[in-house]
Length: 113
Ligand SMILES: [Zn+2]
Ligand SMILES: [Zn+2]
Image (cartoon, rainbow, N blue to C red; front, side, top):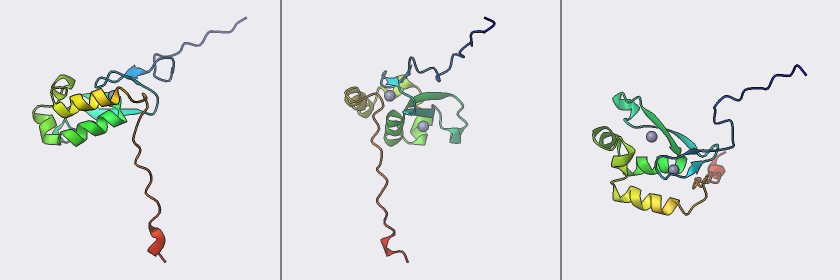
């Protein structure tokens, strides 16, 4: 019985519990999230948060990089925005891994030789 119990690192590989999205407060199943720079990397921002792909997309649709640099660089401030509030209300009714995948546009190579 010399078997040592393996220590599981506190990692998200452990699928027992998903991390919580700071924007919409829903769990983030594997593959449904990525990282966002609070201050855009273009402006030297380092601080990153992880959030749903769909939430991330929404941030970038709502704010441009200058706005993010100037003001919308905390979740609290982003939540002040009407569109974000509306989005969060809406996304809460969706599955945790909801993402409106842009379906790969059907091959338009027809006029190719
Ligand atoms: Zn989210
Ligand atoms: Zn981002």
